[in-house]
Image (tube, rainbow, N blue to C red):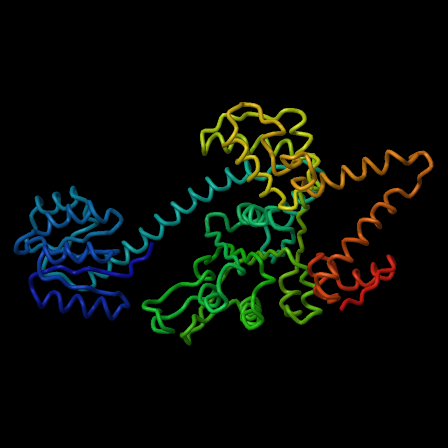
Length: 477
């Protein structure tokens, strides 16, 4: 918290004028009231960080106003002004929650000193509150990142090496793999613990608003900018800024982000003052940024600035041994948050979930477990509780998952083959899967190999090689 807006209430016009002039000169926004009733009405329409109240005013006294003010605005600080230096006034003011009091006549320096002290106290209080929340989040994070598989062990080792430094990290991973969780883990295990962790999804903010979200804006910078706004860089002061889906950032903003990384300074939209920022950047993407660089859709210099330490998160299908532990965690979470009764899975249901491809990764697993736990009346979930992963109601193929259909076809085909005579089954099956997949995507993209590679999630050169190797006709009408 910082003191920005101050309410001054005094029935003497000269006092109001002097305080308003002095405080405004220091950069505070000041509102004035000539009596307690008006001051109370103003506080109900506008929030104040500090109120300076005269103890004797017509109608509603300063002490009465103080009591009401603390009831309705408990976080605001109140300074009482009194012309009587009696102990009773001072004691009563402090009992009712005043931060401090001033005895008239007083020097403006005395009020300045109180405001400075209040500002520092507010900052310390905010830092303590933030640290408590960070410690709480850290504890919850350790419970949330689940995985003892070999791929996850590698992630933990890299985290241990990079977290203490201020190196820029670029996290790669499919949607739903937990990129923000890993970004938080980097922050919570760094020297910036206790400072803000601020996240921004670059794909979720309209491009015309993204610059303001990142760098902030000054009052009047554009239509609707009725007051100064701090951007994410300033909000993450001395902490960590997590830029998710960085690959969707417009090119013109990429240039400005590069400058921040190089110069460690920003300029708010509509402003001309440079502001120093000490913020660690952790970015994430589910795209192939090197491919976007080749297509001139992402700045090469920014790519190298961000890609100092690349960290690739494994998809859930590559760490299936973690699925049972994740299921147990999500069942407990569903019980705590929604009071569900499901505590486990039947053996066939566990096999179904462990063998499913999970295109939506951990996020999809959590959603499916939560839905099943909410809808099932039983403590033990079975296959019928996961209809989206099993065959359709008519036992036909229409409701089957893609992996279920492939499994069914493979079982049928391999039943007619003597596996003892095979020595290249993996390659043969893989090629038979790749050919129709690439053909379908090329058909959908009308032969546009750049778009097809993007849809498939592979490099364009890789696609070109596969077209040649698999003897695929790449031309489409």
